[in-house]
Amino acid sequence: MKKLGKAFVFFFGALGGLLFGYDTGVISGAILFIKTDMMLSAFQQGVVVSSILMGAIIGAVLISSLSDKYGRKKMVLVSAFIFCFASLASAFAPNAALLIISRIILGTAVGGASALVPLYLSEMAPAKSRGALATLNQLLITVGILSAYIINMIFTHSVNGWRIMLGFAAAPAVILFLGTIFLPESPRWLIGKGRQEEAKKILRSLREESEVETEINEIQENNLKESGGYGELFHKWVRPALIIGIGLAVFQQIIGCNTVIYYAPTIFESIGLSKESAILSTVGIGALNVLVTIAALFIMDKINRRTLLTIGSAGMIFSLVMIWAMPKLSGFMPVLNYAPVFAAGLYIFFFAATWGPIMWIMIGEVFPMKVRGIGVGLSSVANWSANLAVALLFPSLLEKIGTPLFLIYALMAVFSIIFIKYKVFETRGRSLEEIEKTLYCKYNKKVSV
Image (spheres, rainbow, N blue to C red):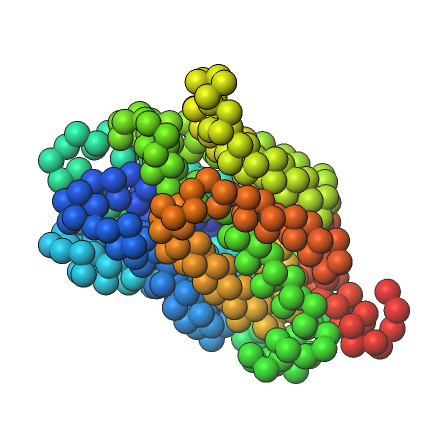
């Protein structure tokens, strides 16, 4: 497993992100047709869209916790199997009730992938390029979302097109399962289970020989600390990591990112675009999402995480205010009726370059090794819970409040800047063991750092 092997490891290690993106993004177009076929109210639409998030909360807790016991690789295989089965079940659902149940089951895989992929990549990647490699997760999420938008567009006029849209995810799920069979286990997990020789062999294929012994020693030194469970997450020296993990996870959602991802066609249709034009506009949003995330790969290890998060929040505040304000000015300039499409693109630009990848990178970085699986899992639960609340309530709130709803998301983005300033510490360019040592020394008040 030399250079080609490295590419294989990091690609398939991140491939779960593609399924995560596809299965969360595909509903944006499918719901336009499902609501007609099944005669759904605004609230019922919210339930169909958000049902996947209910399952994601379960999956983020269960699968990430089991990854500490059984290994990262085995749990990715389990997730891939669920992706395949539940995608097909959703496609063949005869009524709304079974569709919702299928999407809840599918959500367990989505939630598991959301925790496992950043965890696996952060443990496999070297410190100097961990940000870029972990951003592969977000890149493949955006590719998955764009793929969903394109599939939506292709099958817009097909009989039972929404069923094809939902079922298409089974194909990459099979690829993920087969590829994962050949993935190595996380060397950090192996060392935690006393399997040093296996870990050393894997690290030799991913690092320079001179780096291997140093990294092995750092990991072993950290493993001498007492094993942790959920209780240790609330220990004085771990608590700052928990605050960062949960705080970033929640803010990523309540600044409104998935209102654009899930409901962009609905928003565009509400300003007068046809279903076809709304879905086509969304493909443009998805393409922009991918391109900006690719650009983010090249800056993620060159600019501090905190700086990028702050810039992203400021840009999204401006974009959200535009979404609210522009239609009000359309009486003076009718072309401004379509300004929300531009504003949504601007929002995605700032989100994809900052909060999109960085939240997932940092929750894989900040937790100590002994509680990393459950720490990432709990952060993912917080993310999916906030995601669920936003997705479930958005259709009804937009119907009742209208575009002033976006000002509420802008206010949340203001609060996120305050959170970054006072609660988030920098992790760029530091090994996972260095971050853990800083936490232990600074917040356990043993020595100053």
